[in-house]
Length: 292
Ligand code: KIV
Image (cartoon, rainbow, N blue to C red; front, top):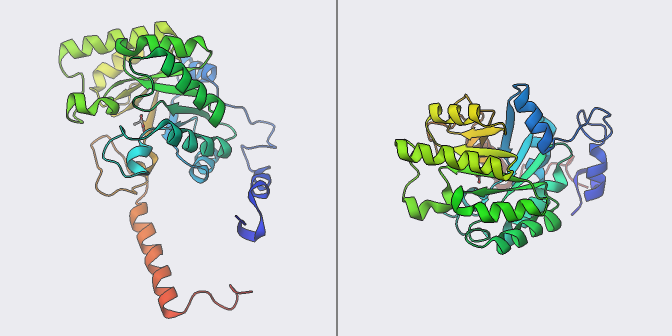
């Protein structure tokens, strides 16, 4: 596809060289799993957002985000499913490959989707290897604690970095039946702490905690030496993650308490689409200057 100004893909990529913080910048230093550990050690917060395509990845990376998560939330916000369950490994690989092409600095983490690692460590290894080889990703994320530990261990044994994910684990939505706050009872909180320690011991480089009480998340972050990234887990953790489409206000209906909207893009986009529609209908677009 021809780009603006007649440039094709590689030309667009070349045009990025020289942008502050990007290729051609001697100061550019890739974010690695080791660097995230160093950030935790010196108390520097980690900023992570989701990305599912090239254009968003390029903007997010240029803005300086430390970690881009190719989340299986793509199932909801890109593909329009009610849950994250239906998205396939092939779809995740397509999203991840596009994100990889847009990133020069951030660490890229890719969700292993539902059904590609639970209860089968050989399958887990094969799924993770596909993500690394076919998409060129840097690491994977898996939901769960002791019940998936064989799969985590097997993936790690291949040298693939793994990020854990505890608390609200959307792939198990049909087991729990709701998206309410997790680990509010003592027994569940104790199990979460045991799972967090187990994931660290097994070799995970970081852990996501989703929708749990802030005090519990703070205790986990204090106890672990690996970075703990929260979503709906309060401020006393080592970093934060949100779904990019949600924090940009693309979806007006989704407004849980933990979500801060940094833009109201639904309004901005609707207004732009409306103006375009009116211009086309009235024959105001294109103008003579916009014609060849
Ligand atoms: O899929 C996703 O976007 C996630 C985040 C909510 C952590 O797993």
